[in-house]
Each structure stands twice: as structure tokens, then as C-alpha cells.
Amino acid sequence: MKNPTEAGAVAGFSLIEMLMVVVLIGVVTLFAYPRAGLVLDRTQAGGARTTLVNQFSTARVAARTSNRTTVFRLADNVVYIERRPFTGTTKQLVGNPQDLHRIYGVQVSGPDSIVVDPRGMVVLYSSGSSARYVVTRAGITDTVVINSSGRVIR
Image (cartoon, rainbow, N blue to C red; front, side, top):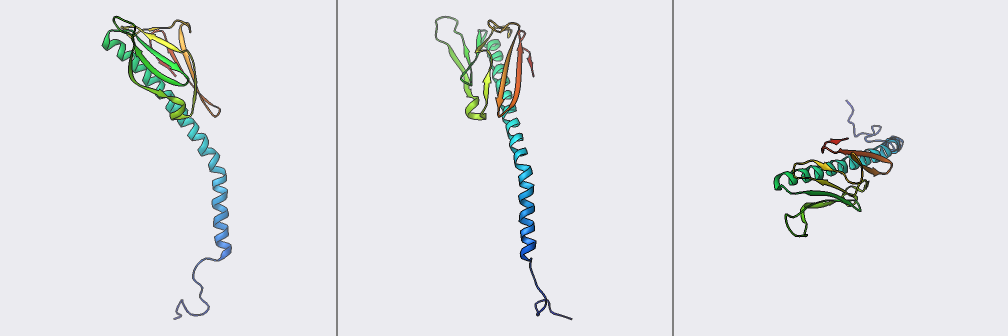
């Protein structure tokens, strides 16, 4: 019986085999990397859309629980909620403002405010019967439509 360490037996991989593995990994990466970027863009746009819907839902809940008019606002890709006072002019901030561009890298366009009355119904002054928000990131576009009864439609 021959000992594998004797002359004639070679252990390990040849240079050609190692180069083939490196080239194969490079080809797989070449095709997978752009796809991974697309998936990341879709995920970030979807996350921003979800945050937008959650903030609007918070505005509705705040209006109904406090029995005060609440305003859902969008300014420079920042979404925040203001509660109007019973008396006076100082508005109260509800929750934390969410900077959608900083968090998700998206651009959001749509009406600058939606007023929610104490019943949870939406008053759309400038946008007609529904408010349409468009979330965009690297060519990926997602939309949120809020109708006058406060229903969110994707």
C-alpha cells in the first residue's frame, strides 16, 4: 500500500482549479449584484410607504382618542402629525416626525396636509376626493391613496 505523502501523490488544488473558482464567483456576482440593488430599492420604497400609512393611521387614532382635529403633514420628505388645541393657537406634535429621505432614501410627493376630524373622517381641502402620495427611489415608484373616508388604498 502506498503512503499518500510519498513522491507522486499531490495534495491540494492546482492553480488552474483555483482560478476557475475565482472566475465562477466573479460571474455569479456580476449577475447577482444589480438584482440585489433592485431588491434593496423596492424594499426601501415599500418601507417608506408603510411608514407613511402608519403615520396617517396614528393621525386618525389621535383625532378620535383626543376628540380634536389632527393634521397629517408632509414637508420636505418629513411626515409628522399635529393636533389642534381646544383653545389657543399652539399646535401639539403627536409622535416623532419621520424623515423618509434620511431613513429610506426616497422622495415623497403629494398633498402637504390632510385634516382628520374628531370622528376620524378626512377633510381634503386641496386634493379633491382623495389624496395621492407617490414614493420614489431609483426609478421604483410606489403609491398610497387616501380617500375622504380615511381608507388607505395601495
